[in-house]
Image (cartoon, rainbow, N blue to C red):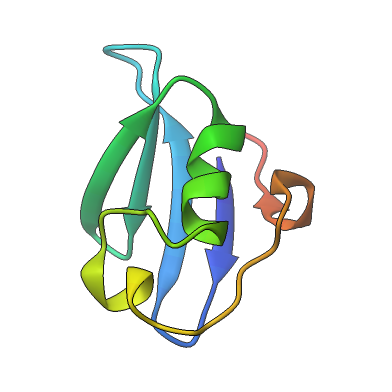
Length: 73
């Protein structure tokens, strides 16, 4: 699991045990599902996360998943 704290909330990416895909969420709201965690992080960076408040904001996110906090699961 990876997390990214922003002024709007806590984004997180985790692998679904049911589908094997990667879920992008903010706080407790699930946003979308991706084939890789890198694609999910890129959606946040490019403001295409399916979370309107974030997508229309000018807040910045890291370009790379490597800059997110990685949690051991």
